[in-house]
Image 1 (cartoon, rainbow, N blue to C red):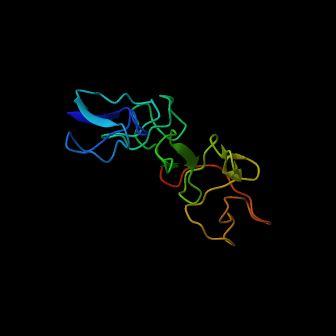
Image 2: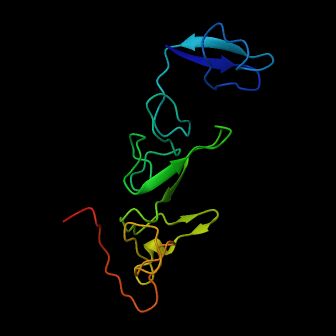
Length: 146
């Protein structure tokens, strides 16, 4: 069974059970329903590792709402917005897309200036920000494959 709030300030959000009189807020009621949370609706529930509001592969959150390798997805602190997924710099997987967010871009996806050598250490050819350092040249690849 699934419990969710109807009415009140938390309308549509999950609650703890029929006896839960606090989670739903003023004028809200916790009710029981046989509910299946669809992946891609922007709300992370049940077994979902992430939910970015779509079912597109290659953006960090898979079509089955699982983390995609080389990405990290963060849930909105209020739980009202879809997850935001970004590439992980320093994991050894150089991405060719998804390096930009609303707050800026990682150069990891730039094939001329970006790199990812599997660590967040500078002075080894690939900086902690995933940029190729002076006097080095990096060739794309994935350190986790042979």
